[in-house]
Image (cartoon, rainbow, N blue to C red; front, side, top):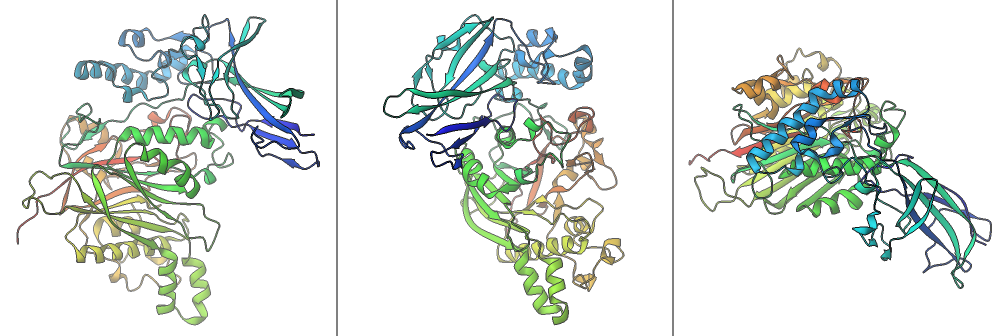
Length: 598
């Protein structure tokens, strides 16, 4: 007979908005052990599995700390109540917690007041989606069934909600009848119970004893302090939103670049300081999606996107928000790579014209065939073939540009998205990959008068040779990294140049004027005019990510404000419950310059 051996969850801490998918181990009549679902429509040996989820609701009201969501709150900020900030944001577990968080907590008060003044109501995006409906104080007087008479969680048919039993000051409310369950704001502060039983397909009677598990209390999804768009002229542009909530004017567009940290690399060994529940993919994918959608960028360039997550999650989810998707998976000649680069663009703002895929492995094979002696070819390929790729998209704008001198003429835009090799001892390979990409972009530029954006994780700091090549158009022959060239692929050094007028978008913070930029300049490296960091782990703090643009055809209008180390909470690093990647997102607003008649 079919029997349940064990059930367990990857994480014991359930989070609002993050699907719970229990692992159910079964033993078939032939003694084989499986973890497949056995629905009523496909029974095994006349038996199937039935699932139920319960909310265990205590008579005691519970509030959860907004900073440490696994801790019970002991005090509440009355200023939040007065400012009508979602109450879940107002709770803290101790006076020290409130004191430590005050610098960032106060921003919520300021922005709530600003949102009311400008919009007449709170802006939902200021506080994130998961917590905007949660009160933080749990009402145990009435079951949720009074407002939601049917169970809709999961993919099974609707069932009437029911109170199953009450004992010892606890009431169990049935909240779902599918294998998976996604906690809602109503569940905050309550434990959940999962029940799995074997049922006779003919009699519909339960066979044997139910197998159950109970979770910790459901916690709200932590949301970081929102990041504003800052005009390079020093005027805060937050609040000047169009009908879709974007900050761009008619002729402007925004571009996001973000290494989202592939799940395959987000291991507890590497990121031991991050709570396991915050490192789990079900949580991180929802938190990343909330963040990405919240930026409302016209073009989104993501790195470290696993191919299955692209197909099953990011492409369909961002499609719901009006984005078309392009993807290039890393090649897999060296390792079984699972991630790649994904570029999304809003269908109402851009149309897809052409896609180019750059495989550095193919370029390496061509290079070794042309310049490397036969005896060194294997060694050269072992060094150069690292599976990295770039995705280049040519898009056509569907919106008009203010100041364009030829009405009706197509406005094209070339967007490159790449992830350069990570190994620090392969500085020659990094530089060669960047040079190869730039040469490809030069060919596109030669065939069309087209503005260009080069986005990505270059795994190169502002003092590196790849950064010099990108930002200065050449590399100083005396640059120390040129000494690392065992294959001779960087010689002559004079070839390490390009003619694209590329400028780093975030260097605009250093050149701009106005009081709003002073804080941003303190977060910049004055010697390189780049952010102090875009990657923050326990072992590394520095800048690896950039958005470059062709300065002869594009102008930076505004930039997403930078984070400082204090913003990442004390004694922590990335990823964290608030920020679900070890990188931070970069976002720039651009305007096309008028064309000059010739």
